[in-house]
Amino acid sequence: MREEMDQKYEGVVTFKIGQVASRAHVNKETVRYYEKRGLIPTPDRWRSGYRIFTQRHIDQIKFIKRSQELGFTLSEIKELLELRMDEDTTCSEIKSEAQEKFQDVVEKIEDLQRIKNTLVDLIDSCAGEGPKGDCPILGALEGDSQMGRNLR
Image 1 (cartoon, helix red, strand yellow):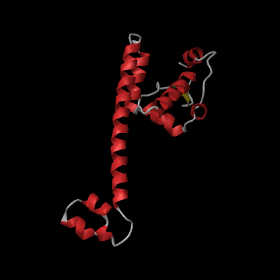
Image 2 (spheres, one colour; image 1 turned 90 degrees about the vertical axis):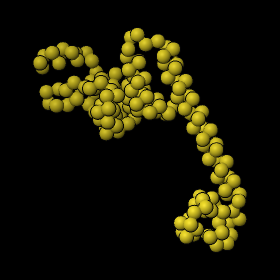
Image 3 (cartoon, one colour; image 1 turned 120 degrees about the vertical axis):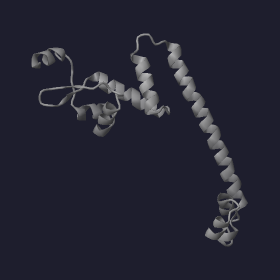
Image 4 (cartoon, one colour; image 1 turned 180 degrees about the vertical axis):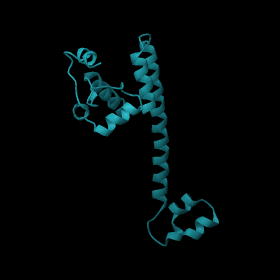
């Protein structure tokens, strides 16, 4: 077993978890979490118990982080990684995933714009003076309920 492992990694640069974390600009807990979630390949282990990481692990973690920056969830990233590893995957399948994420982002922006406009209207409706019982912001948030009026 030891000889097989030595031969498998002969000439391959290997890393310990701290080195992987440093090179991928994450912390060790993130590396462990990605391993647990199946986002990076389960590393082999030396007889000492240390995990054997390679440049592939570092590259995959960087891929995950860049994908997160674009708003992909870890579940979506796992799908992207599976497509990336599947030899039969076409570029159009990857494009479709990106288009779905784009549509999600467009919808979130529209939702945020609605929230922004509502907050502007609420802020504009309040003079910022008088007792809180007369505050139009609280009135709008509480709705027309007795409990809301009692809380003011």
